[in-house]
Image (cartoon, rainbow, N blue to C red):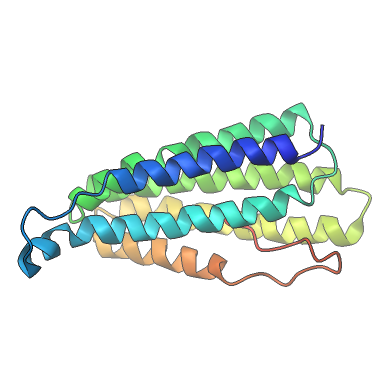
Length: 196
């Protein structure tokens, strides 16, 4: 089996994730600036999550193009990633409505931690598939280390939310910014950045 069906299934799930997030947005009940400002936290929460999911999708695409063989392990690791990503709409809505409270922000951090860990595990399969190719194995290994660093930062965001939610927000935005810029591509032209 090629990666076509795997990518199509993943694309469908990610499209549903984005759709659910946007359906959670509610327009202000009154056409006034104060009413608009009251829903601003939900809009900003959506914007952050849309960016995170979009970067994950782009980089998932690049990862799938470097897959040598679609194994059962790869399929389950991919399903694991999609499961954690599917919780992003819930925590996005929860955080947007309670943006100053530590619990919703911490929960957002936990879901992103588990999504990043799932990316790390998915990358492990690619490192394993390229054991005989030093350049590709080294590339995937370095990206895996970056994924691991993101896991640790996201993990720190959960307890930091109880110190100040703004520390957590800084971590969320900082990690998204670090993955937004593409990584150096390999000669094959198919290797891109990889999001946590």
